[in-house]
Length: 280
Image 1 (cartoon, rainbow, N blue to C red):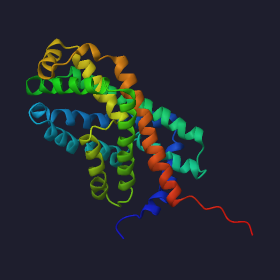
Image 2 (image 1 turned 120 degrees about the vertical axis):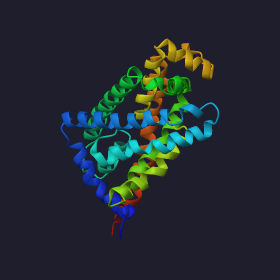
Image 3 (image 1 turned 180 degrees about the vertical axis):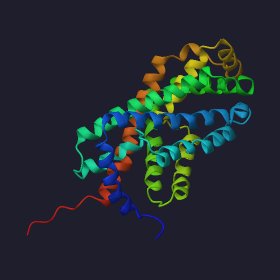
Image 4 (image 1 turned 90 degrees about the horizontal axis):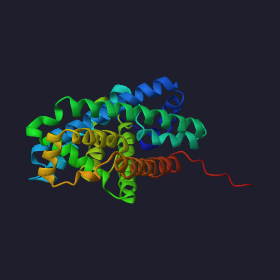
């Protein structure tokens, strides 16, 4: 058999989760930074690839961006790093009593901090390193518009889209664990990740790139003018506070619900929970 069955994935994840929970904080942070960089790099590609057709054919532009983005999770899983959203599955070894709740939360905290640092680094480098000027500043306009849209949604929209996103991301991680070779892992994760980008769902770690890169780019008058001209934006609504609350906080809450509750707890219940023995 060339793949692991779902029950085998659940059983195998216990050891994976224990290893993640036992990492020293220093390694959690460094591996988290790397994952933040990898996801942000995918975010760069998803802004650059469709930049010239965002206005004329937005649906095809989103499909192109979605087809590029799975490279980020592929780097996370195959190169080795720690991603907060995927680690929402750590609820499985918690429910199996292989790790404690405090160890899961410890992992989430330091991996999240590392992810934020890595994504912010890429956002700063791409905003101030010339990447935004590609295609006559079309990439900058796309980046600023993306940040604007994410920062002006309602809090409940952010939660709902975060839930939907991490159902797909954790399903992608789960499906990748079914494969025994790197090619199979990439094929398994591709469609769920492409779908979350195509459907405009909200991934908190990707948003650690999309929000800041737009906010950094907006500080350049040329980039801001390109965005205002292309999309008719009122950039006074694009602020760090709006992005943090309406997008990052909301999508993080949604991601935890989608990944931990809907995928993690469900699969633990289906494949690992032992039924209570009836008393004689």
